[in-house]
Structure formats: structure tokens, C-alpha cells
Image (tube, rainbow, N blue to C red; front, side):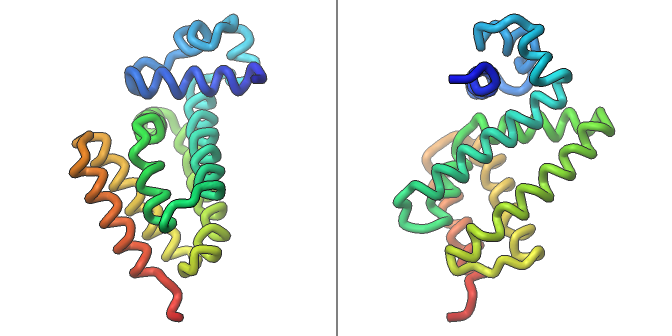
Length: 175
């Protein structure tokens, strides 16, 4: 595993175990087994680290969705959104963006890129892939992920699957 990936994996583990407040460069460097100078070479600021952890986490989910044999896109996304690390990364990034205009600018760009990457996935799943439909479904995903994180039980996960299936049905292409 490359140094950059070790750092990102260590950051995800810290987020899963302790939340965004624990995601400091010294803690991540220690968890990754690298010097802090190595970490800052790849991620000069905490904001850049958070953004790249978010991107890495989403890319991993997209890869899993592409390889998975989930009964539906909604089921695959529901399973991915139940991952506390992704929710904590995004909440940490939103919190950091609220305090730092540079992070907010990067977050806007990240969201635009993420939604653009969702277009072919939606099209392949038989869903409308226009900007409004993608924004709607993305918003539902985020809401389900945050509520699952807050409630953290089987009932919340089952509800998320039902809500995501309903959202997907509402943007299904007429067929």
C-alpha cells in the first residue's frame, strides 16, 4: 500500500473510531505510521486532508457499488451510507467548511464533481440523470446517512433502504 493510501486509510479508521474531532494531522500521521512531514507533503492542511478522505471514501463506495451484486442501486447505496466513516468525514468537512472559506470552495467543487460522477451510475440503473434528479437523490442519501449515524440501529438502516428505494422509484425513467 502506498504512503498516501496508508494515510487515507488511517484517517478513515480514526473517523470510524472517534469522529472528525480526532482527525488531526499528528494523530493521522501516527496512525498511518508515517512522519508528520510525510503527511503534510501529501496533505498540507487539515482541510485538504478532510477533502481527500471524503473523495477517497466516496471513490471506494463507487467501486463497491460497481462490483457489488446488490439487488438494487438503492440497496447498495443504503449499505454504503450506513458506513459511519463516510458520514463522519462529510460532517467533519461541512463543519470545517463553515469555518474556512477555502474549504467551503473546495467542498462546493467536490459536491459538483461527485454529482457529475453519479450521472453514469444513475443512467446505468435506469434512473433519470438530469441535474435536478441527481441533486434530489444525493440530498436523500446525505439525509439517510446522517440519520443512520445519529440513530445507529437496525431500524434506521432498514428505514434508509426503504427511503432510498422510494427516492430511486421516484426518479426512475418511464419504461
